Image 1: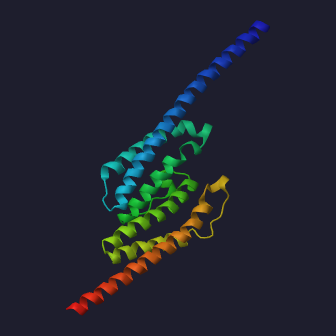
Image 2 (image 1 turned 90 degrees about the vertical axis):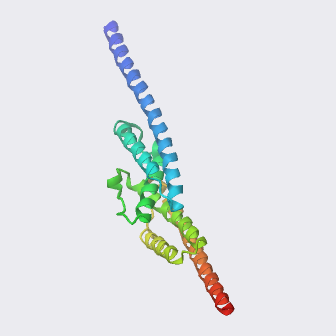
Image 3 (image 1 turned 90 degrees about the horizontal axis):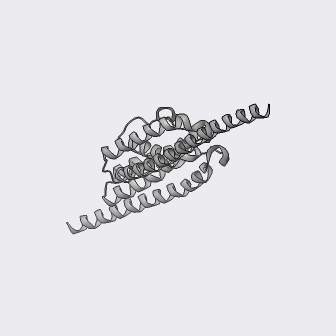
Length: 209
């Protein structure tokens, strides 16, 4: 009886060790892919903010996301999304910003195969990236284009005001929304100062004619 029990235990434990070894290897693969996705998406975002789209970076990020989805189909039941949050959030931000700048349909969580909590946090970050777009447009004196994205910033923010969930459900969402209030106020102030500066310059130019 003891020998039979020992054999059963040995067989089961050896199987578990094999499973855990495979799971550990899978976890390392997922983390590595998430980091690559994070870096590639970050590079694409920087190009988009500079209004210089780089299709190869966006394509590369999407390829990493597809590879990550395949790994996560086995990985998620064991570890959840927390392991890859940063990479997926950066990727989602890239897709949202690209859609806005390119006047494309905004991708949903379902179309990106992204959890809603990650999507809404990336949505907040995208509002912050639009501030950078606006500042670059103002520097180039493209005021009307800047006004367009300021309106979009406000539209996006209006749709998330009042969303309140704890960290266990939505991560840092509440903190991000509070920060965005200040970000939008600063952006509106920068826009008005730029408008005023342009009007003063126009007046000076007219007086010299």
